[in-house]
Length: 66
View 1 (spheres, rainbow, N blue to C red):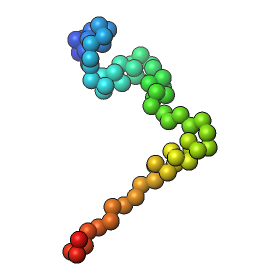
View 2 (view 1 turned 45 degrees about the vertical axis):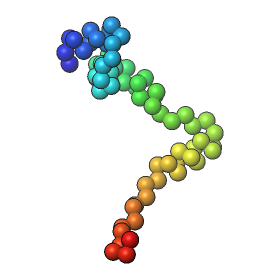
View 3 (view 1 turned 135 degrees about the horizontal axis):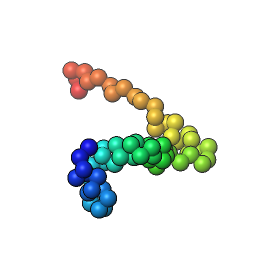
């Protein structure tokens, strides 16, 4: 990672999210960053919706009639 990238972040300028993740990991703050993106499951309904959203479904193959 370049010094310019770190300097840009310190100055509050935009940098690529990938670089934000790298800096957090170097500083030992990867877990805190990870917590920001975990779903907030506070009720059983939240848990049900989350589990339903993680179920993958296959796309139906097209037939010649389609």
